[in-house]
Amino acid sequence: MSTPKVWDILTKFKASCSFRGWKTSESEDWIETDDRYHNFLWRRDVQPSTFERIVTDRKCVVQEGSSYRVVEAAYTAWLFSQAPSETLVKTIFENSDFSRRVALYDLSPLLGGKKLCVKLNHTNSTVFQEFEKFLQEKLGAKLKPLPSPEPDIKTYTVTELV
Image (cartoon, rainbow, N blue to C red):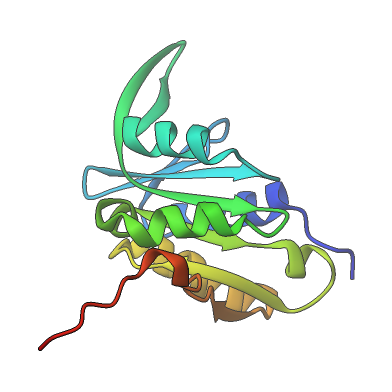
């Protein structure tokens, strides 16, 4: 079996979503259900400042015929072809708004031939839940939660009580 590429994985997943009656796009990587857009962004890597700007802006481009419009993405899933940086993971853990709206999927083990995907998903997105089922059932991947970054001991102080 050839190693699946991120584009192939997402294309097959979007095809399965159309059978559920969810609206998808051939040219963009979003899925609409219940008047909410679930955006998929796939990258090898992203700088934390760029990540924060994109997540904060929540923009999603939707093509309608020959024109485009920008909508607000309710949820965004980042599909990485290499492990995301610890700084990026820490950014999500430290911002409760981000962790409710953003999911990370490290597909690098799966792309490397292992039946494993590392995830960080604290959203209540039904689309992302279905994406995880798709990875498990169609690609045979085991999903492993991304561990919380270790706290930096230097940032803590101890107060002595008398």
